[in-house]
Length: 238
Image 1 (tube, rainbow, N blue to C red):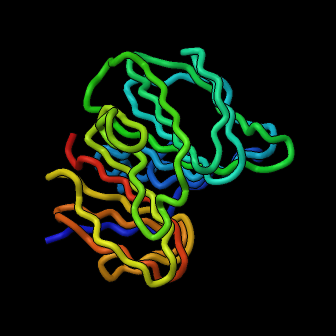
Image 2 (spheres, rainbow, N blue to C red; image 1 turned 180 degrees about the horizontal axis):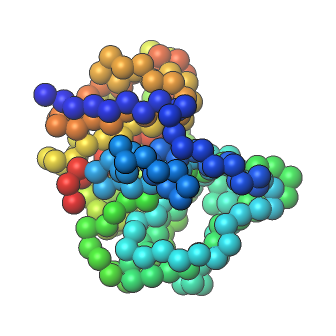
């Protein structure tokens, strides 16, 4: 029997730093909720808006897989592996922090906000050599179908990380539906709505709502209105 957990948008943590507005699906920094520590290997899902020209100064990470998905604007990245890049809507970035990295993230634009999802996944291997990956995606490949944007396999579609995890993005017209098969036994899916109305197994979700599903093989996703959503398929035990 499928198990589910519903996280409405207005139940997330919220941090207002003036230059940064962050909505946190799971406990993070000043937001602590013992019932919202993680969803399986998914540790962090932050929905961040950064003011023009502002950002996160150089800071460390280790033994975490870090994924950034820009939604609006241009996000500038620099790290201790000498990577310098700007990512925008349609791109996805992944880092394996492994034995340790430093990086910074800034709004590259001086006049417009940047909005992006910051996602942390627990790795299945510790102390790996740090690595960086970034690709540009074809937005048409998610129109009324699921576009794979991340997997465990370097030869598969999208970026890859050190975990048996798969991410898919969908941009569906009203009335379009699809069936999603969970990729690996023991995995669950955290479905996060970016915009519009999405119905999953009879549960209606609106913008920034999320539904976690596990102990299931598959489920149905239907667009109640024109909508965009992200499916995060991760091990529930790791």
